Image 1 (cartoon, rainbow, N blue to C red):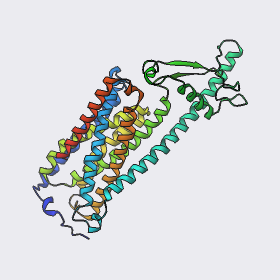
Image 2 (tube, rainbow, N blue to C red; image 1 turned 30 degrees about the vertical axis):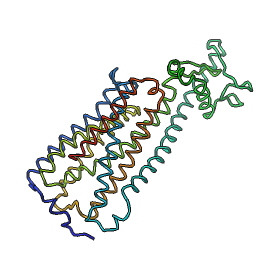
Image 3 (cartoon, helix red, strand yellow; image 1 turned 30 degrees about the horizontal axis):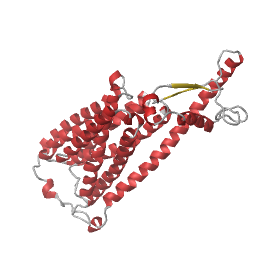
Image 4 (tube, rainbow, N blue to C red; image 1 turned 90 degrees about the horizontal axis):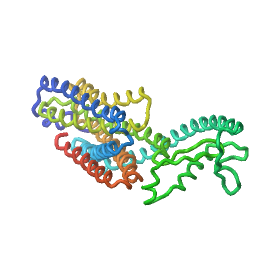
Length: 382
């Protein structure tokens, strides 16, 4: 299909095996430190009052990270995939169909499916846990009512039953979601929502449980979303990180490796910051956070190590290498573009919080374009 020397002239340019070997160790150390620093900043920053995940500074920083992810997908991955899949070293059949856009589209649609199914799963899992907790509170509250300790304020529908109550007096899971939705739909909207809707309100039902409303209304549901977003986002970033690490590892040209060290270090720092922000919002256990952070930080250095080990017999211009690189980059692009537009940008920029805070809007849009611009500019070197 193609000979092993395809593209070999460019591959041999400025070749120096010993100098390249030393530079690869420098690259591993630099990229590892940059990745760990980027992913750790949001994770440790949430413990400081001015960097908490519910603060305006974090929202603006997350907008910057969203711009980084968007530029990574559009500028770095899609272009890299297109170059690989249209390379003259491949059979002509690969240039007769836009495989890059096709694989990116399939990836985005599959990401939507995973996003939906994963969110449904985690919401059901959290819903069952809340149901058990509420049933326990119900039993305690009913005891308090019988002893005259707990005040009772019932919210009833036209039939006289408490909203969401079954005929037997229990509260099923669908009823609990309807009960919460009933309160949310009666909250003020528009201008009144900006001035009065952020304040917490407490409602006590005949079952003795209460709800707080405001920004924390959908905290549990948002928790499920953040879990799915962080996991899918890591999948997209990691698959790309393997490719760029492998590409650097197989190179024997110091002229190529030197600019890549700086570019990929910034690249990993920005991506790590974006991923760390999503992980910090997901409220994972400490062990899970550590595993996800380390998995991200180690992927590119591991790719460099693998590339170095196989560099003597690896031809990056072979059909197998080009197809693998092109397909993986296109799949990663679809994942990251979807995650950036739907789960990061739309989720924050179309929220009530953003629409009611003009300064936050200006800051977030500036950070979004800054992140996208800086990440796109790195394409000059990598």
